[in-house]
Image (cartoon, rainbow, N blue to C red):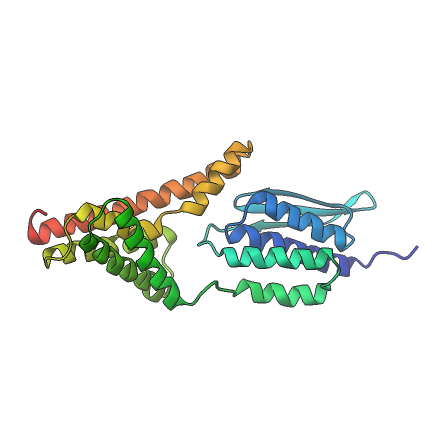
Length: 262
């Protein structure tokens, strides 16, 4: 019986870890990352593959001949969600399972997935405007409030993508400043005679920042008794919500200091 090619095995192991990492880091569920890694490892012949996954970490090893010969630990940062990448990795997993993708092809495709975007910056900025306007109207804002929220949503994501992402601030500061900018837009609009209710305008304007996916995943993890991952994601969601409130509060305070009450 031929001896295993350990270098080749480690390369395949690394590809399996990359697939799970891409799913987790872009907002995918833990069970999805686990199943994808299991399927890929099985199809690559890594029969001794074992993994342990939490919201911000992957711990995996491969056992051969009764001994652990390779172990990897990957830290998973909590970054903005890109579900298109999760979908792309799922499709690659199917191709691997069906034998339509070699390890070499998989490596190239994973590199492409890492830079994939669901849409361009312009479309994301416009979508932020429509999202803000929709929620403003949903929360009983007038048409004038909705129009201001649309402008504030555009200003929010323009500032986030064109300014903050380029200077690479921590996520906490990005959320606070983005919330403050969109809220200041609403305050300025009201001062200039646009809009009717500042509360409705700000409520809609900051909604594109609300961490819906992390909160949903947190609840799911908790219901599945994965308390560690659930608490990590819940803490991230609650911290983001707190930062949104701080940013809006800063804008309201500044507005009062510069121009009196509303």
